[in-house]
Length: 173
Image (cartoon, rainbow, N blue to C red; front, top):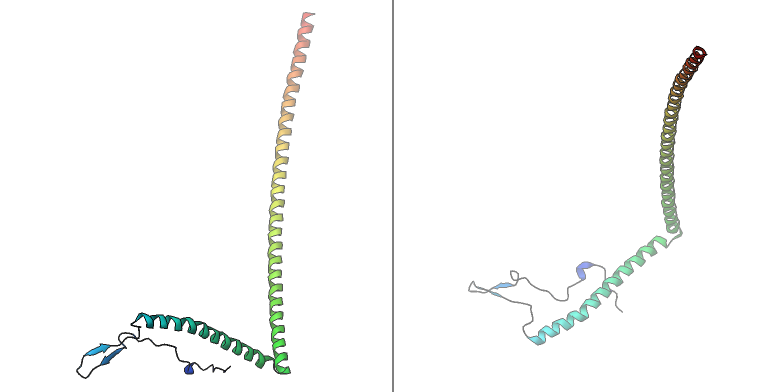
């Protein structure tokens, strides 16, 4: 199998098509005629389709081969010597350290954010509980005062009834 060069200037297209403006030829009389690369007969059309059906996979496989060869050459250049291997290993190690440090920073940031939110929620809950406790104690004191007032009023009314009743009983006797 023959090796192909990766120089793109050596590659030539299988067929060339000319645009109508590029395909004009000048004749000595000053008029222009157009030449076309389109097949004129059905046989030429079939021949062109058959050529394309063969040339497309061949071209694709050649491009794939060139890509593989360049990749293998690149790897061979990187890993052909001990220094190259060590250089690549150090590069991998640096990337690993960078990724680890980035992850640690992200974890610290996330933990700090979580702790801050937790403190804020705890403070909010404690504040709400204190407010509710104060409100409840205030209402309990108010109800107690009202009960004491009412009990004093009831006691005074009962005492008045008792004295009134005693007076009536003593006046009747």
